[in-house]
Amino acid sequence: MEGHHLILGDLQDIITGETLPDTLDERYRQKLMRILLENKGYARSDIQCRNKLNVQVGDNGAIVNVDMAVRINDKICMIIKFAPGSLITRHRSAIATSRLLTLYQIPVVVVTNGEDADILDGNTGNILNKGLNAIPSKSELSGRFQEYAFTPVSEKRAEIENRILYAYEVDDACPCDTSVCRMKA
Image 1 (cartoon, rainbow, N blue to C red):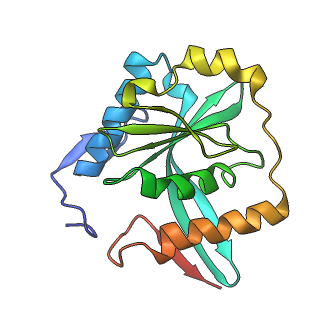
Image 2 (cartoon, rainbow, N blue to C red):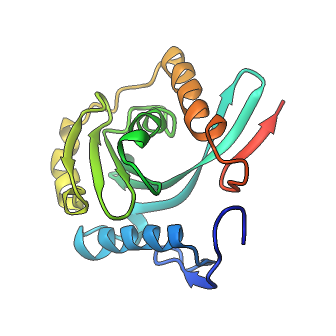
């Protein structure tokens, strides 16, 4: 066991080819990557996996994981946040992530447990669609690229989103969760 994940062996990451611990969560992440590659028309180079995001609130900091960031025309247009369980409880932290991973608002946010998905508007947090089949394809994202504002995130907004993300992903994390790295100043 590593943290709170049962290790079932090793598996090979479909995007990077690296060997990873085979956990139930990682199997779902690989399933999502397969959907993007095989059903949604993305190339491996379009998808960044296991992104690290620094979250800072006062003297407290942490590094949280962003499962997937999808690029179109050198801009991150969509992030995918995987977590087991209820989707609705992940919406707000995923929206905060979409405002912190880059200096602009990422337009499409996917929250999924590997069996279902909510596709959210990054600007409003409103649900655009539901289901794994509703995850936008590369042609859909490319077709709407000109509509996306990629609005810069203000310092004040980033401060608020850091607090929200820290509360959801760090303060609320299981003490044995090894995917969150807590740092003290």
